[in-house]
Image (cartoon, rainbow, N blue to C red; front, top):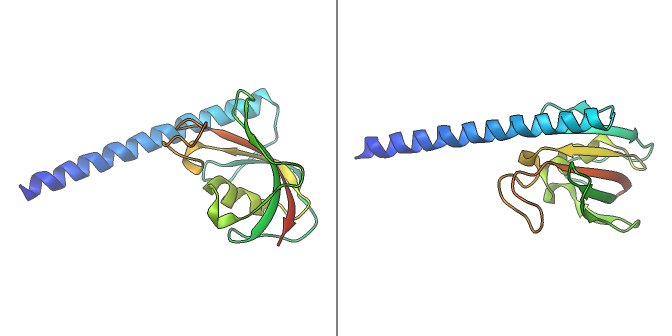
Length: 148
């Protein structure tokens, strides 16, 4: 009986891994098409995240655990906005947000701005979050206003 349980767990794990890999490949194709369609100069980080640097900034640097204030607008690849801050931005700790922000925002210094093209695996994954559907590629225009 134990052998069947281990076999089932192994098969389930392999199927989940293949599903995540397939989703990552689909997201990458969507992001690359968006980059091409919008003539963006984006840099891939290797995790699936792509970054467009409009202005790298000249102020303080931040890390994945910094408190920061960011002005942002989030939208889908069809340009439908799902969220945005006021021009004053929002303040948060980078360790408490989606992985795409935790990884991407430290590429900018204070005063910097650009676009983060985030695959679903670095966003909300296969879970819906409010109005954001599961497996959504997310695009954020960001400006790093302050590193606290």
